[in-house]
Length: 114
Length: 117
Image (cartoon, rainbow over all chains, first blue to last red):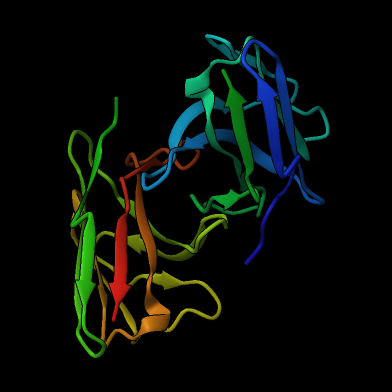
């Protein structure tokens, strides 16, 4: 199935460092979502973006909907050990029709060393 | 916030058994629910879109006779893996979207780990 290109694939950082990850697509998306998944659990929504150029924060997390509608980034500031997990971008593609279908990125594994 | 409950969390069964997984939206009505499969160290892959009161829409390559989906109410969808075999072992996750808002974020259940011996 279709997937979004997400990078980096993995990151190993020290506690306190800032983190940045991004997601790109060759086609336009109507929404961009960022989820975090802990082992053995379902993804949990972090941030939802609905308009091109939109910049939204949720605590130490900041995400932006790219102007071209083909990309998004997520920044985590001052990382802490509990930030460990897999981060997925996801989006609703512009099909020109009504759909809830969500396409997922390939994921970024984040490891934070205390 | 929106809560989606998935049951069971773990299933271990013999090859040839059929397994049913339930997905419930606890505090909102979900016209549409989604079923995903996730293999180790991989992303979520959409299997099918489940619409209340109608037939599910399956993604290319997903056998509809193998993965039976029923969405009989606005709060419950079920996935039945029929005659399961070891290659069906995976992490199955459901999600639900609030009624009428096509771009509202999906909320996910905690997944079901299916192991076929």
